[in-house]
Length: 201
Image 1 (spheres, rainbow, N blue to C red):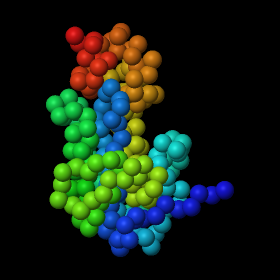
Image 2: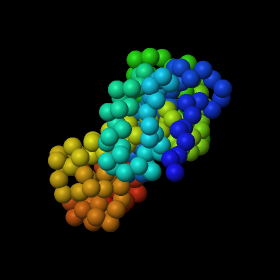
Image 3: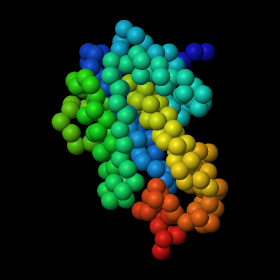
Image 4: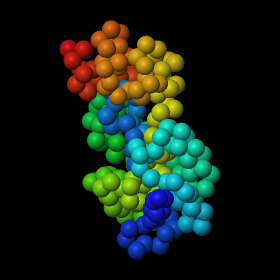
């Protein structure tokens, strides 16, 4: 049975200029944390939007250009490994989300953020737990962030071969941990994360 379409808003807001924001890449040992912000067009709905983790890679790849074509506005932003190690992963994620909203070509009137807290910013906003399964704009943002980060990791795999980054996308799999022990951390590994820090120490 087809799932009902996710709503554009949860607060009785006008469905124009409401952005959804999500990030990808808090858990990996390598690479940037990537955030996306999306303002959807109520007059041009997108079928199949849901939490990116519930979609196959192929489904996410198919939706990635559709979201960019049909959205009123979208932006993708990052916080790099140095910022993650300096700030911590939570604050770096907040920074990436702030950069994504700031980069929107259209300023949102309201922002929904996936999770249980919002960045310290000037936009009226609401944190929505499991928002990528509850709000269409957050679901769209989760897809853009996930696919963009996956593309980053495929590119980094060519630059730093041997770690298997294109396969595990930087997550601490057995394959990745074994490669880290063998090769040592690369410049794009997060030195503040335990498995990487242990090898440095």
